[in-house]
Amino acid sequence: MSLTASLLHLSPKLSTQFLHGSSTPLSPLSKPTSSLSFPTLQRHSFLPPVRALKYLQGRVVCSTSDKTVAVEVTRLAPHPKYKRRVRKKKKYQAHDPENQFQVGDVVQLEKSRPISKTKTFIAVPLPAKNVKSKSGEEDASKELGITLESQQV
Image (cartoon, rainbow, N blue to C red):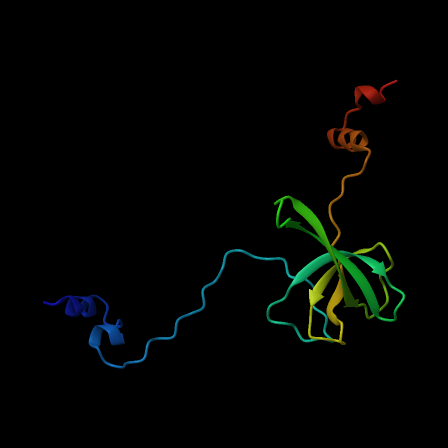
């Protein structure tokens, strides 16, 4: 008994062009699923999504134009000669439909179709981070339910 006959005997549904040498079509494969789940950001309904989305994060440096903000993005890149990481800054024009951002706000830039000659990003507010308060002793005493020695009289 040949190897192909034994394979067909074990699984009769297994028939490919490689076993028979004929041009039988391959069965459609299901798409692989990933166990990793990335956080999805809120998409804006007025613009269609772009296939390869690129996210940048920066600080608003100018908001005087109507529905446009200038965002400065800082990244670290190695110096070509000295190989030390140096800060590189670049300014992008981003769409701000409600004029909600002021100078100094930290925003996330979401890639979109070109809105104008220079605007290809949409400014999106960053999700709030879990920031600990400066009074860490007070939080610790509330969690434990006991007073600390520094708070006792």
